Length: 504
Image (cartoon, rainbow, N blue to C red; front, side, top):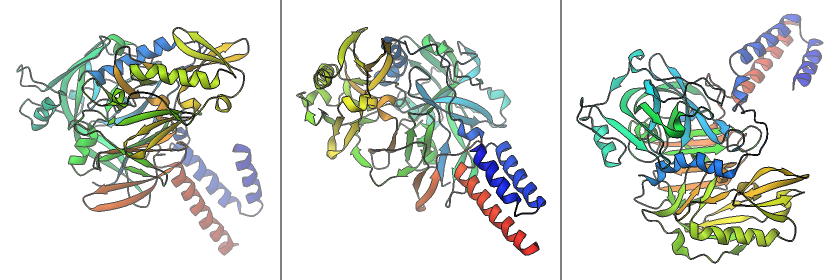
């Protein structure tokens, strides 16, 4: 790109006066200094010695998030996305929020498996002080924000949170509080505060505006277990559940965002992606209804096909109850199948490829020694849902490359099982490289394959009606997208060329 740019400048120098060339160079420099280049780097990798990380360790990373599952004015709001599904690099996706007055930046994990946004606070015991993600961690200080206020037990929002077990009141100090205990012994507790959330809103015609809205969120004063570790530490967790205390629900009730959000998590080339409050529009989207009256994003999985053949699994294995069902969770790195379906799934894949690759067991995981491309050898998998919607998984969507042995790559089944549990969890391994739409207003979830490095069309359906927005999701820190900046450059160059003709 640099060499082509300089070639263009040399060709233009022969035609335009020197003052015009200076204007062009200053313009390009100012755009770079304004954050355009920075917006292209959506993820910072952790330098690792090798890929020799046990899948058992990755399951431990997921336990923290499974605890959240098993224990129970108009415009498109756009958030930057960093991180990657790759468990050997990052193993999570996260975004950056600005909260308070003056605004301060916080990195939070994108988690559709929980409801509440919480951030470590200045009085926190056990909050990490540094992160292996090479990001600067910040603690929220209610006293340093002029717009911060405590949330009392008598607050209507606190009472609503009690109904969903997202808040509670001990009676001490009349302060609305929370305690989240996770299945592996990790946990966080704190109290609720209200403050201003600053965000970019994409208006009609891809114009952007800076907006603010008051939100209620958790101020963590205690973290235990894996939450204290710094290797993948972030400032908090951004819950995208459908209960009343989630940020999407709060903004929707204020008329600031529609009751729909979408993400496109990039799996290749460093990760990153798109996260918007709005509906990403694509002609090939398929939808399936959400299972009603569930606290999470539960889907009605009917069957699984491997290589076009439906597996002989009792459909009741996938039925939804308090102890089983299929959940969409962006906070889970891998993917998990109900215990009674797992063996049939792995056996079908192994049988399909056994004549071409060498099956091996590694730490209890089914793996394969491969000397060619997995896409040429392994079959497609189809998860078939209610309403006729199927989620097609190509081999990289259910396999994880582990390491290499004697020139052969070791690929393992990325789907795991939770022993004795009937839970199926669709994590980042499955969700990556797809547009996923969570349509809360119509109680459905949709998806389609997509290159998440591309811009998208987004619509917001507010009280004022349906409006379409173009090229959302690729915003830089100052609220301008690369496509917009290129458009500005092109327009100004046209004006400069016209001026050159007039004054020559």
